[in-house]
Length: 398
Image 1 (cartoon, helix red, strand yellow):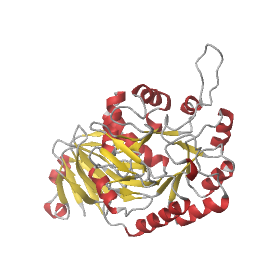
Image 2: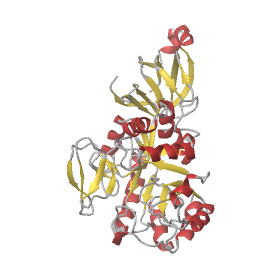
Image 3: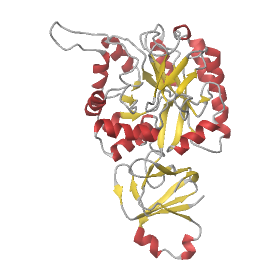
């Protein structure tokens, strides 16, 4: 669909543009003109464009969720993806990476194959643009995964996972202290897969060795990591998470839930001040219960999780955190509430930053001529009014 969005305020997110007309042609942003110029275009020119009046709303780049295990009763490991994709679009996410959690290895391989096949034929909803695998190469002492399902990296195994994804495995979380993990990191980088450090208790010197091999991302900073504490009596203890904050080459995921449970607001502020806005990526870490009413629900591994009214975090029956029911529009809203950052900064952390860390910033994450027409229209409370993906209206509440 070729369209022209008029009125509204464009948040690129690096600039605020008033009184503009945004033209979409062949799934791309064709141009951004002044509203005055638009009014002077001849009718013959404009007849080829569907006019969308954004009113007093904001126009921004669609959100990109790089870490999401499910939503709308879809588990990325095993279920059909369409209901999840449609649900994501309603909440302003225009593209996402279905994220495998640590399950039986053969199920993870099957999940990679199934999602890869889906990418080839997807026609509606938020677009699946790659696969994220959170495990199975994790430290069993950190995180909500079952201990018996994690494993040490063996080339014959992890190559099967990569091959099953057919070039679509784009991120993998690795605990670098595992036997064979350094060779895994080197292999993943040779396959242009982003390596994220997480679920780890690695020592600080060994952490730097692993980072030098090509780690660029931190999986949900301040969650599911050990301390590897170094201290002298009477001084502040130093752990790996403090060290990660000052590694300039690392971008950090933040799970900013409603009540600041996964990451306390003070720690969110510390992360923003240490890493800078440019190096924080908002994620949902959502499970298939996203979109459900409060209650207790089964996981695919036989355990149960619960969330209560007014909460968006999931807990196992032992109280451990097990992801969220969040959506990206709420993640943007939450980090503003917890840190006082600006709306445009929060939008950047939910759109441009994930695009950049995934090597997609030449086509996604920004309102600019030539970019993919992945666009959301929303109000100042981040209520999504319209989601446009590759030039097509996928959700409309204007």
